[in-house]
Length: 286
Image (tube, rainbow, N blue to C red):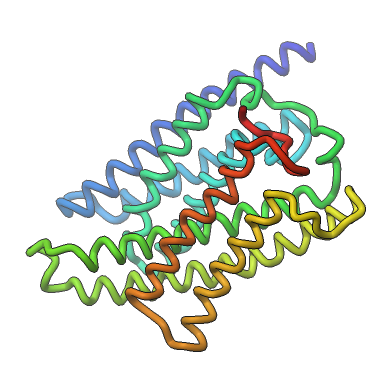
């Protein structure tokens, strides 16, 4: 009976995962069609985005029910699913708040690619729901990991807008000349808002991780590779916000820092775990 229930849940998870793939692909498609040809209604783009968000939420919920713990126990499947859901959630809030589609044009392909990588290339042992390992059996797991992942998602979105700023800044397309400056100002403003939103979450995530580390390993800080790169990420975005607030940086100079931060985040989130070294080496891929 237990085996049948497990098989049934795995089948449900597979079906929902397939719907997620279709929904994310369709969402990416309609955003790009709408941005280039203006033949798709905004209601359709936002509706497809909300559908993708809901399907990802369902997928996470099924894994939660199946494993009896919040589905963020490994880096290369569950946390990437949570990142995809965070991207779509941030995008929903962004569009409600701003009525702009720029973030969707940039982030929907990223979300779709991450989801495809997650389902097609991650080893099966990471995709199968497993009980928590002893190192993760703590009340701090949800607090620390979810806050860090939300911060990564927000900082990545902000950094993507900064990269878009640089690309547009150097672009000489005649079709953009008439409203190029207006778009640059908005990209600069919204990237700053997204990074400002993500930075407190990053700070809280690092602090909660330090408290958890003291409980688990007897030390608040060990200069573990993950900790070191989290600190580097914090420094980069602290400099970004400091230069904007104190020195009134904006536009091109800030976009350089923000774009650099995009690389740093991915090194911190994924890159250091590929080494399989340090106290955070559980869940590594190779």
